[in-house]
Length: 110
Image 1 (cartoon, rainbow, N blue to C red):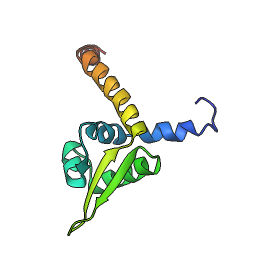
Image 2: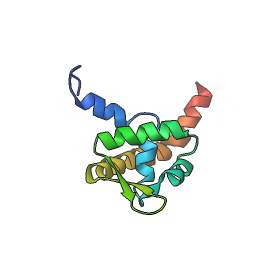
Image 3: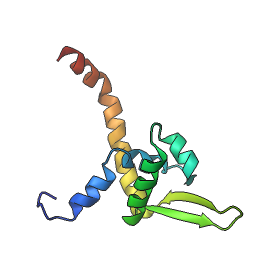
């Protein structure tokens, strides 16, 4: 990980970017369509959601499921590795929420 040429750096940057943690954790409960995912991840633009999903799909963490219907319906869900990573991110989010009062108090005194 600390080697400049380690390929894990790119994978880590993909899952820890601005939007990926929110997208991954949003998909832990159930598959979602694009619009529902956009609503779940407040503040993300269509363009950024699309780019984030493409990146996570290319890494094998998100699966894009095109259902044959008229019009075609597309749902996104986590692969097994995506689920494992999303659960770890959820644990980190939980710890941040637990520590948030202290973090906020420290900000006001600094």
